[in-house]
Amino acid sequence: MVTRKTPVRRCVGCGEGKPKKELVRIVRTAEGEISVDLTGKKSGRGAYLCPNRDCLAAAQKARRLERALSCQIPPEVYQRLAEEIGQRTEAADE
Image (cartoon, rainbow, N blue to C red; front, side, top):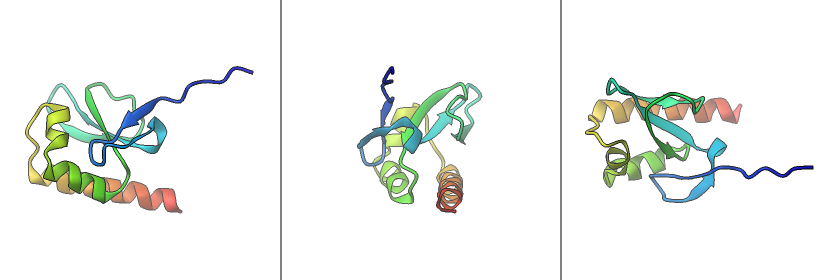
């Protein structure tokens, strides 16, 4: 039986390395749109976050998400990301 390596990614909020499937991918497309990529397959520049609002708040405060995506992120986008992450965690809890 072949054992596969699980891909590990680092959360931009807390800096902890976790398996890729446990994290949420935030992607900036070529058009400049920032969104949550639940499939992990959208094309564009990506950054990974733990699926909780604390990590998003830490990334926003230290501007780590902006640095990872190489663009300025308006507050409305952070608000939308918080809502989408909240919905994802609620769906995972059920």
